[in-house]
Structure formats: structure tokens, C-alpha cells
Length: 332
Ligand code: NDP
Image (cartoon, rainbow, N blue to C red; front, side, top):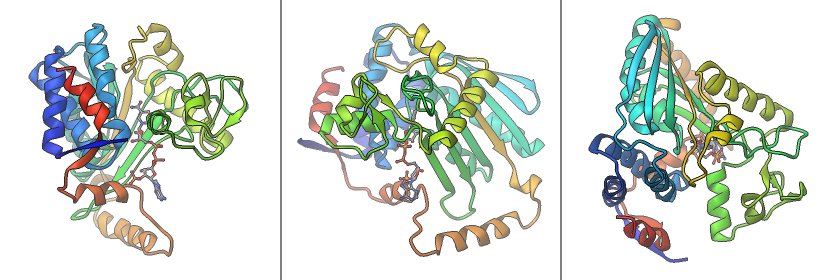
């Protein structure tokens, strides 16, 4: 497989031009291009340019509004509802985050619920943006069924990702961002494209048999939850937070409503921000830092997020799948 070297700025530019040539205005295109280029910058390849053909399909089919103007409404001073106006999630998130952060700074805890929006990205940007403001962040979203609940062989949950960030003033935050499936579908798609095997326990083929063949899981099979029944319970919680509590689609409802254009399905997002300065009070940072320093100094420990933070430091061009770059240039 050949690759094309592109700097992070070139990746942003390619994504921006693809999006504006296909109906996005400047605000929507720049927010989505930022999300895509920062994913490539951090080596989160399955949520970078790989997703762009799907974004474009949804603009072309008319499912997603490239001119969306997200609108925020305060349900209470600490509960903000944001209507994404049927646009991509990045602009909705960028619009809602300062409001959420201001409410958490004032009340100690605040929630942002996003409706009528299409999420096709990783979830660490939203919680890292809160940690940068010295807030604790928690986010989750749903899309369409791909994961069989523990004991079942049919998909019911989406890969239901959840992310969490805890601020470490002067340092990168503690942050994890993970699908509650044994593997994210995007990563299975990349493995299927590149002909890589997956470890056992990731999925079942179309007949419900365990397989390590990424293609068989990707085409007609199902993914398994991580951690058996425990992962299944966390995936259920995410459906209830991101759909039940937000008031948008559960995974099966999103699939029923979707036009199957190959882009993202409509789904809600739940984002919570908490202020350690208010909740824990004076000395919160030193206290938590003591814990985190002890944790990261243990033998064999690699902190979640560290791979991305290390990748972020490099200003070398990122090696992008050459066929994908060619395909994207053809979409402009
Ligand atoms: P991974 O299993 O690769 O990683 C999950 C988390 O664990 C990351 O924070 C990662 O940090 C960390 N981690 C990985 N390896 C180790 C290790 N050896 N020790 C300690 N920590 C480790 O991610 P997933 O496949 O579960 O998810 C990938 C992405 O897909 C996520 O960004 C998720 O948000 C996204 N996604 C988005 C969906 C959507 O609908 N929008 C749906 C499903 C997933 P690091 O990043 O530094 O490797």
C-alpha cells in the first residue's frame, strides 16, 4: 500500500476544500477540517481523512446540512441543550463548549446535550478542550447497531464510545477515549482495507461464528462488547445517556431513520463538565497529581492518550494512504 506524505496543514487544507466544494460553509468546513486534521496529527487514523468520503456522501445525499447554525438553549443555568441544525458535530461541539465550561466554572457541574447532529469523529477533542480549561470532562455518543450485547449474536448497540479527561495543570491531561466495543468500527475498517488480522474476541462473522478476519466482521458480521457483560452494561449506560437523556435516537432508531448513504447517522451527544476547583476545593491539583504521578511511575504503565500526545509533538508530514488522497482530490 502506497502512502502520500502530507503535513497537518495540508491535511486541513485538503479536508476544508473537499467540504466546501460539497456544500459546507466556512464555519462548518473549518470545524470539521480541524477535527480531521487533529486526528491525523495525533495518529488517530481511523477518525481522520479516512472518514472524509463519508462526510462528503452525507453532504451530497442532502442528509447533513453543510450550512448548519447550531443553537444553544439553557434548560437551567447548568443544563445546556444545543440543536445541531442537522450539521456535523464539530461545529456544534465548538459552539457548545465555551457555554458548558462557563456553566461548570460557575456551578461546579454542568451538562451539554447535543441533538440533531451527525458525529463521525473521535471523542477526545471535546473532553481535552474542557481539561484545557481546568475542568473534568466526560462525553459519549451513539450511532447505529454494530455490537451484539453480551450473550446475543445480533447487533443492538453501536460501538458506543466514551471519553474522559482530567486536567493536570502545566501537563497533558489524563485522558482516555474508547469504544465500548472490543474494537472501534473505524479501526476494523482500516484493518479490513489493509488486510490485517484482528485478535480473537473482537467479533463474529455473518453466521455468528467467532473470527479474526477483519473483512468478515466488517462485511455482515458483528462486533463484540469489550469485557463481556461488564462492557455490555457500560454500552447500555451510554445508550441511555446519549439517547435517552439527550432526547435523540437510540442506535436502532438512528439506523431506521438513516438514508444509508455511507456517512454518519444522526445521534445525540452527552457532555458533562465538572470543576475540581469547586468540587474538591483548594489543593485539588496537587492531590490528584500525587495519585497520577504514582500511577504513571509504576512499572509497565503506559498512560492512555500518551501515544497521541507523543505523535502530536512531531511536525513531520503524516503518511496518508495514497488511494485515499487520490479519491479525496477527486471529490473537490
Ligand atoms: P483504543 O482501544 O485504541 O484506545 C482506547 C484508549 O485506551 C485510548 O485512550 C488509548 O490511548 C488507550 N490505550 C490504548 N492502548 C493502551 C495501553 N497499552 N495502555 C494504556 N492505555 C492504552 O481505541 P478504540 O478502538 O476503543 O476507539 C478508537 C476511537 O474511535 C476513539 O477515539 C473513539 O472516540 C472513536 N469512536 C468514535 C465513534 C463515533 O461514533 N463517533 C464510535 C466508536 C469509536 P491512545 O489514544 O494514546 O492510544
